[in-house]
Image (cartoon, rainbow, N blue to C red):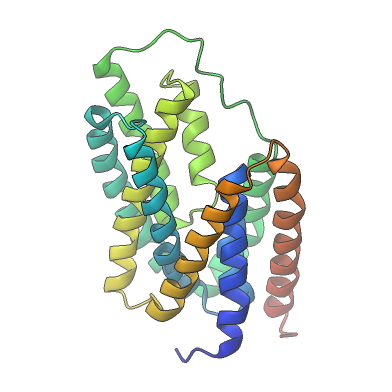
Length: 257
């Protein structure tokens, strides 16, 4: 597909904003994927190229967590393997769905995902629970990693938030450990699904790399400007982008655009 300057002018700044929002409050995927869709690119191309740019940001975040010692690699290896398998399956399922059906699904899934993520459920729910044995922790975490890896390969927005909620609530992890494992799972699912999309020829490399650079910059600026009012900043930005996406998609489906 031929790219124009307008594609870059729409996608790159919004993906940068997504990185900024993600670093201070989470939910950046609720901006980055709609950013590609608003630019008018085909759905599968949007999901595939978004995987490239998000993988770049996730790689940086995972490296920071690893250097800080927040990642339990003994558990992370099992979670990564489960996430790789789930994401590959999810990406292949996504490629089987038609463009029109996918847009219809997004009109339902995206607002529901946004509603759940923006409610900001208590992420500390697992901190006061009894720690599980390593065997039980591996089993539960691997099931969670596979399920959310499948979701991330198929669609993606909100994956990080869902992972933290599930790992703290059901695997009884304290927040720092859950965050570290989340980064491993998320990076694994991004890489696995990206490989599937690359093999299908759906990834726009130049746009994805440029957007990825903006994502990294946004994450960097967000981490330096962190504020306890991060969620208050993020909500109106996410809602505005989602409204633009929703209106554009409806207009396209009824043949106005």
